Amino acid sequence: MDASVTVGNARQDMKVLGLISTGHFMSHFYFLALPPLFPYLRDAFGVNYTQLGVLLSAIYATATVTQIPVGFMVDRFGARAILTFGLVMMALGFGLMGLAPNFWILVPLGVLAATGNSVFHPCDYAILNSSISEARMGRAFSAHNFSGQIGTAVAPAVMTALAVWFSWRVALVVAGLFGLFVMLALTTQWNGLRDDAMPKKKKKDEAGADAAAKPVWSILFSK
Image (cartoon, rainbow, N blue to C red; front, top):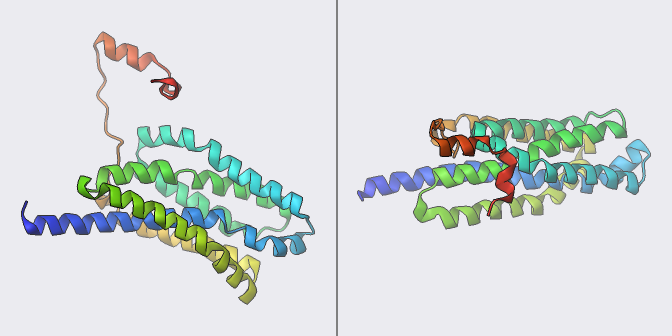
């Protein structure tokens, strides 16, 4: 292969990996954005840690159960569109928490944010698998996973620092605005990203008809 082509592919792979890894960083960052603020939320809304635990449980449970249907949506509509909507939902959910007038408003906002958060693994893996050169696939997936761990590591320190220096509301609003900034950066580079959602031709033969008749959920039980 020509050296210039190899260098060009490497640069494109790094660009794609940087964009997707940044989104994955935000996904893990948001998962630990609230716990450091629990003392502030308790004092602001007059709630106890049990109620705050219910809020966190609702967020984690929502993110867990919505990943399966999101995976089917990625296959049908494409990862780029789903990733955009998910990042917007996640950023808005956490950003608007900083403006919440009472505690119970945090619950639907948390569910909104968690639904958006659920898109990252299905979307990221589809884009990486389709956009990264095969020779760099292993390293790309490792770097992608590591970026998420960095988000987990820095979230408590960043959110605590913002809350101490400003307020817990400012911390959440800033986190939400940063997520929207990442989303805008991703959408400006959509042409360099591919995913696995390819137009599927309808088969008129009997085998194709039988396959189409099967419910989409049957794939979960296939061997």
